[in-house]
Length: 440
Image (cartoon, rainbow, N blue to C red):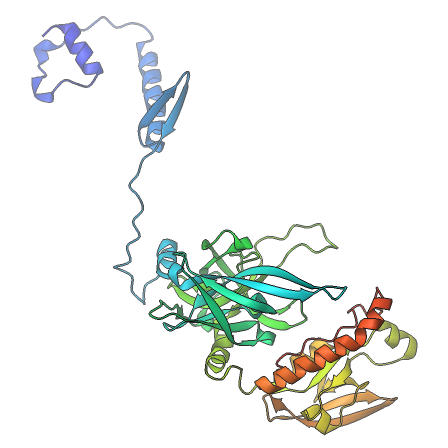
């Protein structure tokens, strides 16, 4: 072997170890000044190249005078065989276990515009399967007013859905599709959640980015949130990304159990330019579990109190100018309801429920929610300059009472339309429309 052959082979790393012989080594060259510096510099250069190569998994692609480093790794395998109920899962495992239980919901809406014309529209949301025989849970506001509802799965299968029943005050609705042998979710225990615990969601943000996975943490528990329709709800707060189209979808813990229904998020208000991110809300599953069972069995929530009134807030102008107390103004009373039997009249202003002061309609509704059907409560009302205490035994919500309240509201709205067309800017700030008392 010639020395130059040895040098060539060593540089290219082709020389077998067992062929190396001491007598093949070239004679040592005399030391030169500065050689140590060059060797150190060479070692440093090799270390730098080796470091970059390690990050890029070792492949170097020359592109002209530019070098691109590319990496390779085996595909991530989502192993579901080792998943057990008592062990947390990875995000990929939660998604794989539940994506086929999550659905996209599209609806057709027929609304009446300002000029009395019917206009068709569409809305989209999310939901999830809660039984093998086709029951699906979602938000009430996702299907509110829908003339047709469709449920779609991740594999592209779609079914028409019927509304079994809903509970607007708690923003839940149960749908039914004609399908069997589905994969339902597992409902967890939202009371066991702690702040800082990791959670994740599957949904359809914007109605287009279907079956999207997002994750985050429980930011807070027991948040009292006033919704756009005035409802005050107990919520879980999370920084998991929740956007339009996610409504009605499942919020999971890392055991793959549904512990909430993604419902709302904060956004920048018109009065503020501050950007709001990472503040989303979900209904705790424990808060509505029994309600869902009632809806599946009877079509409505049993034991829920119904008063039988439509309300508006007393305007601040009336309070300041005429000394009328703040409270919930009774705009209409349903014939035959417990309110009617107790003597409540149109024009009364409710200022207290038992010992709880009431200054607006939201507070009245919140106070009554603490009671059950059949309970007796005392309404303090202001009538023609006098305060009266009226004892009311609360009715139970039924489908028939819901329908009667919806009809009463429709009649009231029709009666107000001529006034509203003349008053483009209502004086009380609520458009003179009654609060929606479906199921109250």
